[in-house]
Image 1 (tube, rainbow, N blue to C red):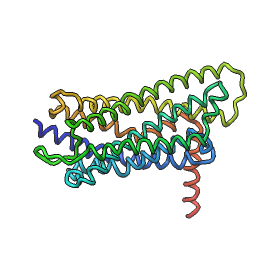
Image 2 (image 1 turned 90 degrees about the vertical axis):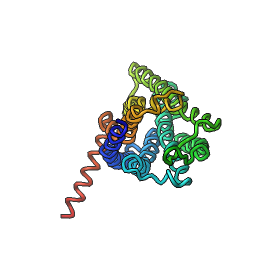
Image 3 (image 1 turned 135 degrees about the horizontal axis):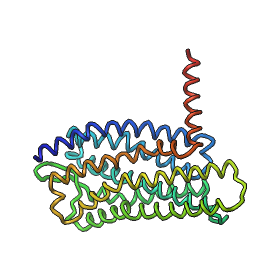
Amino acid sequence: MSELFIQVDVQLTRIFVPIIIILGVVSNLLNIILLTRRTLINHSCSLYFIALAITNLFYSSFLLICNLLADGYDLDPAKYLTIFCKILSYLLNFCPTLSVYFIVLATIDRYCASSINAQTRNLSNIRIARWTIGILIFILAVFFIGALIAFDISYNEEFSCIIRSDILFNRIFLIVNLILYTIIAPFLMIFFGLLTIYNTKQVRFRPVKISRYRRTEGQLSRMLLFQVGTHIVLTLPFCITFFMLILPIQIRFTSYFSIVFVICKLPFYLTVTTAFFLYILSARVYRNEFIRLMKKIFHARHSRY
């Protein structure tokens, strides 16, 4: 029976992960191109979206391929090379956390941009966005040095690159990492997301002239709120199963838990692909820029012939 579950895990990985990789690479490249266009680049929220797209592009084009080779074809250098084990573990922990906190920063930015208080609105600007992106990258890059220490090659019937939870430092690092990703980040996204919705409703009752810039700001807020909701829904199953890994329960050693863990990883992987489609669905300005880009590409290709 356990052999059957292993084969199911392998087939699920081989079927769905390549599709996710292709969607992730194409959608994030399009996000970077569209968000750097003149209509959107002058908004601070776009900088967070661009940083998110770059991180997700790297995750899709490199880390997901490593996971596909390891889980789908048993080609995993991290099992045998210590340096590869540590660097890959570092990146697999660093990139998802960096992505989720880019969304958190964007949510805070949208709260500031939607505020009726002028001083709070002033906090939503490109200069602050650049600084906060740089500071966030630095803090998380330093924090996840702990992954270089905690992860190592271990032998238990076969070689594997794992974190040994019986060591105090490793356990503390793992718990803090889980708290950062599964508790603090979703709480901040929901909290500032609700405040943004509240601010948006307050603004509707004020007879102010809406400029094109403010209209785009509102559409960026809607794009972000869609993304926050989708991100929480897609990552919640994986967060629950990942949290179970540090609990002293026997079910985590069973083949049933293994297949559930693999199934929960697939929607987690999807988070690197959804942003583009959510932006298209939720914001007219983004749809218009996409249509202009497609027309430009079609016209350039047509003119060659």
